[in-house]
Amino acid sequence: MAGEIPDLEALERTGTGKGAARQARRAGMVPGIVFGGDTDPLPINLPFNKLFKMLKAGRFKSTLFNMKVDGHDDVRVICRDVQRDVVKDLPTHVDFMRLRRTTKINLFIGVDVEGEDVSPGLKKGGVLSLVRPEVELVVTAGDIPESISIDVSKAEVGDSITISSVTLPQGAKPTIDRDFVIATVSAPSGLRSSENEEGEAEEATEAEETSTEE
Image 1 (cartoon, one colour):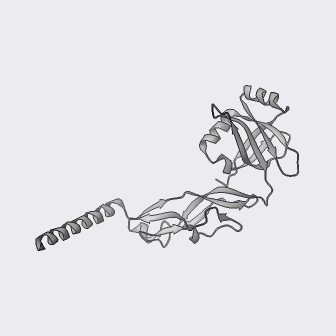
Image 2: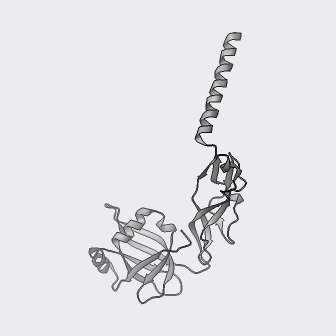
Image 3: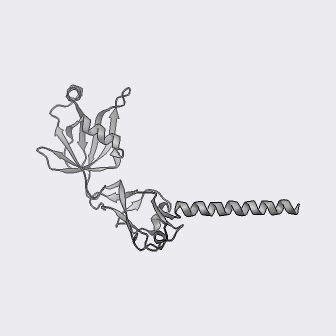
């Protein structure tokens, strides 16, 4: 997600106040404001349909955008607030903050897997389960990694790959303060069923022997 910073196209809003905001909504737009940095706040309008689609996709407030407004330089922004209609729960106003390159932000970074072709566990028929295809990290706006990588080249069946085994980019750290699991290598379903059946058979045999002794 973070490697390709998505563009967010907006229009400069010529008026301010409630009247201009109502006019924007009637025109199928959602008013907003871009603030922060060394420049004045910039009133904007966003197409309602595009904004609504992005909000439904999730993680809108933890996504870094490259905002494009005609007549202004592109700027990296992150959403700080989405105001909604109390009845319809539809967006009525959006606040964005400009980011300096040194600003620390929380972003979900995608996980790449290395070593699948040589993993002994996978060669034995193990199944790789990516528990977290994305990991939320605190990163600097000017140094956002495209992804983080986990290495399963030595993973056996039953092994788990946790965040402590991942080499994170300089300055990045997880938002969760514990050693959480990112991926696991588990036994194939056929083998698990066989093991369960064997376990049940052993339990039944032990029960019969106990009954006979009594």
